[in-house]
Length: 136
Image (cartoon, rainbow, N blue to C red):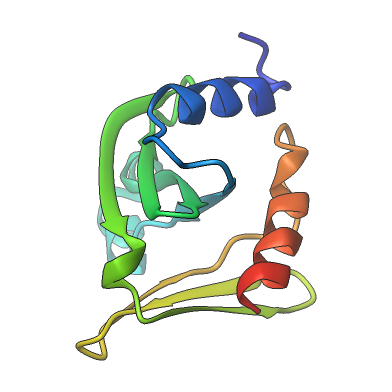
């Protein structure tokens, strides 16, 4: 697998795990940085605490998939949230980042802040714009 052609890898992966009737899927890359205290304690080694994820929104569910930070492949660890359990999905596009907020009926929420562009994943920006059309 080429480092710079991740689109086909993720397209194939999400087609393999798709449920019947799942046609549309829009995915984007998110990295959660380690806390400042981890960088103070572990210094350069704190980068291993960074979490790399692909978030995929389909017409039936939201998939939060963990990526291996060295190979860029999906590890198979994922959280699956049915869209029936989601109250609404909000998108707010900024200059450098887009805020994606998934709200639940109990007033809790997940917030992702992906960059508006991603090297090696050309579908990234297209999928964020499409999500904004559908849910924005």
